[in-house]
Length: 274
Image (cartoon, rainbow, N blue to C red; front, side, top):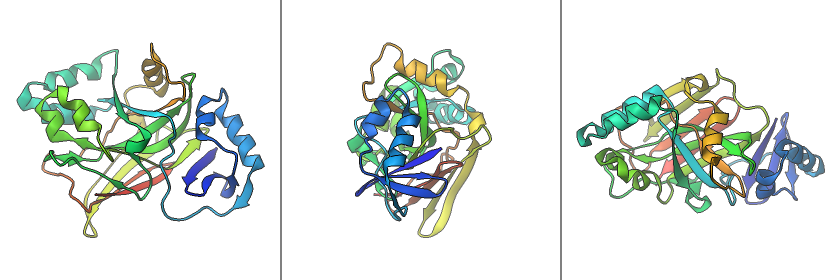
């Protein structure tokens, strides 16, 4: 298993606590490779020994699109139904949870994505905003899941709740997505791996929660297959797999909040709200 960190100086690849600076590594080549693990092994072997840099990391994304799956956890189903009850849209979320076809939507491009210790954003026209901690899949151009990272699907619940057709505005905007701190290539988190989130405000924890990967309703291969069905991703894609941790309806993010999302086997992604 390899962990790939994207830094201002280039790509650092970590294996068994040993790191190399991989000068010839290319993220787009990784995502278009038929064997991403083999490509990473070769680049690791060609790299120069180094120390893992401290501090901020860039998001592990280049030419890829970020997509997201919704209502893949029962808790997410309940939250979506709650926020959209007044608009009459709650029944759609109940239906999609049990449907054969998953909810999939476009989330971000590289320029809308933020890395570890960068700032994420909340919309100026939203009154109810939350982070959504999500295990995120790296999928190559052939539709094969080969890697994993931590994702934060920032969401404007007041906008989505007003009308389900407003979903793109609630989900896609400047700084609405965070990824990192690294991209893990190889075996992913097991079913018992924990996904945890903590939100701090002025040094005090104001929300925390966790769930297990096993609570995801759909398999990773199933989600990837639906995403690539009758679609083209010549540079691969990143796919957020949904959230099972949603703050109660009386909570909303504020500027200056610190969001910390951890997934066993990957690491911790931290972002301050702008």
